Length: 122
Image (cartoon, rainbow, N blue to C red; front, side):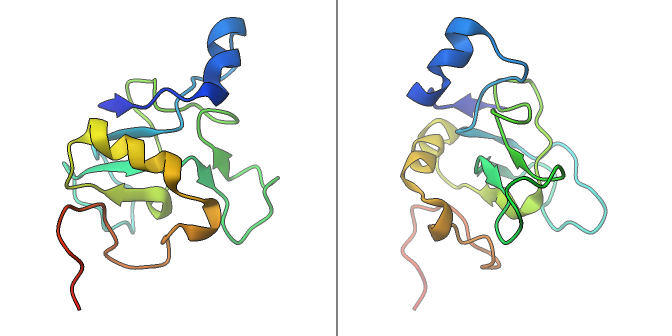
């Protein structure tokens, strides 16, 4: 993990403690990859906190990173590739964009989607 944006929804975790490590607006660099993934080691990017699109939110295999599973204030974070987005911006700035995404607007099904300063191709 390299950067986090502090969110007011984490205030209670910092004031009263938490059973998981907070941090749901986080960025880092891919340090390892599981079998069948396509993210290259060393890829900088951000991860979105909710990992449950298209399935029941109560599924034990999915997560609200920083709330139901450890989040980005840990030294390392294991996330699904479907919620990791490569970033070409400085990571401390890229985390700020996580706060404006809505779960229904996440482009997790769009191959090659990334956070970039370049104009999109026609």
